[in-house]
Length: 187
Image (cartoon, rainbow, N blue to C red; front, side, top):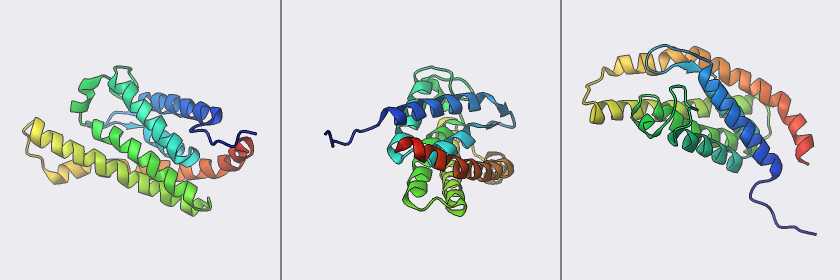
């Protein structure tokens, strides 16, 4: 009997591919407001963190990021290496760290609704810390723009709070319902 633990199972790889597809499709379901559109990407990133184990969540989002940087149009504004010079790239990098943060929290505790919601809120903060920081740094050092911090917070964070809070709650509900079903298939 082979007791060696595999890096990722076939089931993990299938779920990873599914989440890459969902995040990509979510990028194109968007409401354009300002430089950063509201899209379903964030919701699918949270769900990936809730469902996938930390290693799978990290791998999934890194593959998504690399696909976009290689030119596949998986980001809400397309793809390609030049995407690193767009205001939204920091949010995409934040997705990688948010997914792993959500996954670590979700998989280290009993999956109650409140714990899943807390994990999503942590992911929410991670995305915006990366997104806003990158936007400010890129604007200042690359575009030589002096930004009004109030405007940056308003258009890069505050306008997204209502929909992202709904995504956090909705994802916790979906995850709470899906986890028992998926647990049966993983054993």
